[in-house]
Length: 475
View 1 (cartoon, one colour):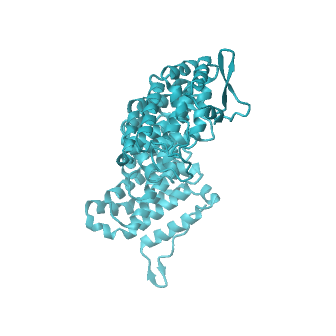
View 2 (view 1 turned 180 degrees about the vertical axis):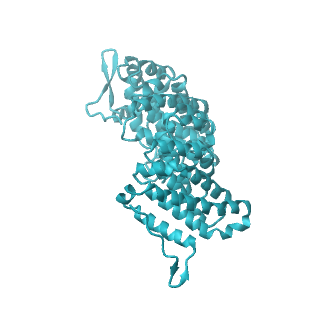
View 3 (view 1 turned 90 degrees about the vertical axis):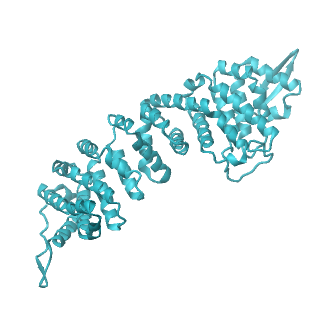
């Protein structure tokens, strides 16, 4: 493709300044590079010319950084810079040849330096923001599917560009810098984030502020969650609000239709250890929910979300075996269920039973908490005789049965009780006998047992707990 001719030096007898000629030529190139065939035939000399214009225009930005009074005179330079970036951005779209040519001219270093100057200016000009955004888009495009360009972008951009841009007030700048980070990261560069945890934390914060943006979410799921070392180092530094955001992403990953890949399973076993330990250490913080004034406590919300994650982890056949033997987890869950259950009976707090079914939206951190405790107990006892017996020894079975009542703050509570009791009694005669004796002594409601799919039959001197023919299916 031949380079477009610059506009004539005179138009209708009026001299045309060189910057205007450059701007018009750049706009023509930008339009041409929208077509794949033009991108594929572009000569290297065009990119050298664009780089020369970019370097020359950046001098005005450098001057404005030294002398703030010069900021108001940046308009024409910013126009040129913006069009240079647009031109280069378009030239890199699905064209490794152009990516390589532009990279070999050292354009990435010039672009990164200029973007950092933009952040230093901190001027509230739409033209500046536009140039800023286009510069980031160019860096994202030149790195896309090009490992050599990714390495050069990382070399020049990390860590300053990400430190400068991930917490920028402009949402597009945050999104575009997240795109660059996602594109450039690989397993070998994750260790760099361990030494710059603020960048990883800024990604969590970016997702918290912009949940609709795909790039921060993808950075967490496709990069962070594959590195147990990074997650462990980062988690301890997160605020409780940031932990809730991070745990929401973990939940989304666990609940996705795609199964965890083998390398992800290995990483998630380490995550399970971290999160189970955190829950064991801080689970009693949820008792603050006994006071209405503490319902917004962020530490409580983080603990509630930990429980949600552990429920999903123990629903995963690859992870449940590890958590079933995690020291102290089952004991803590039963202990917490007992405290919550007693509190709900004795006081009119957030754990007290509502007594009616409500189809409205759940709004309190306590909503579903008891259900999830019972679900977790059921999961931890799934085909695990030691845990079945441990629940019996801790008097957990009467506690679970007593929890089976209508409660609009705990949707599906009855179903999870049924599920837990089934897992507690499967191939466990001792637990079956305990429930049968409870019914015989009036400690377990026969109609309640029937609703749960069980009935007690007397055979000679023995009481047998057996499923009724129309027993409901477990969740």
